[in-house]
Length: 179
Ligand code: AR6
Image 1 (cartoon, rainbow, N blue to C red):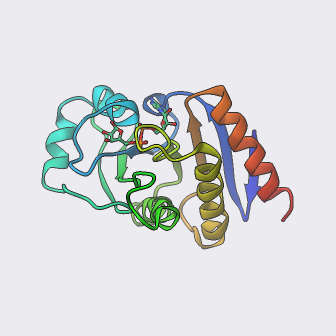
Image 2 (cartoon, protein in one colour; image 1 turned 60 degrees about the vertical axis):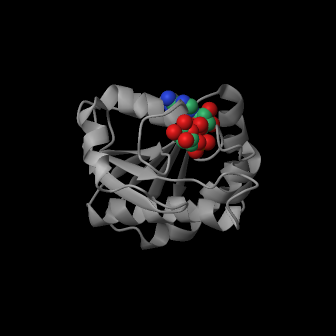
């Protein structure tokens, strides 16, 4: 399902963030040390290969809401943007920190003149953020920034499960169809 927001194409799909071969940058739901892990971080590091952890070494640690960029090595992309989401119930204020993840990732995408970028649902796995709240925060963040984006033309949310995709669709319809 696609939406058009101030000239930005927003796509919502079900899939694997490590298999997005038509975007220049994918976003990693990272840990503070920028090491491999479970979920998205595991998939991204496995597909990128060991060079990715080496490239991350000097950039770690990062704090919740921050984002850093590296090359993508064996992934079918040019860049990986690594952002650390808040742990739900621990890193406060969690909504503002989650919004910062999207803002700072898009800021880096602009700096690197990236046109197409794919995000996972940051913080909604191991970090426990409820999907409905997280979907609303991430879509509102895009809505707020869309008119300022000069390089970015396409933003894709890659949801792992069909139920998460459905939640994103419902939230997007509420937010964008009422504009
Ligand atoms: N592609 C797209 N989405 C995925 C994939 C995938 N390959 N795998 C899982 N998801 P998580 P977090 C979904 O746990 O909550 C890591 O171990 C998943 O269903 O990857 O930010 C790191 O090392 C969920 O909806 O990220 C950190 O320690 C969403 O992606 C910690 O987990 C995010 O799940 C980060 O936790």
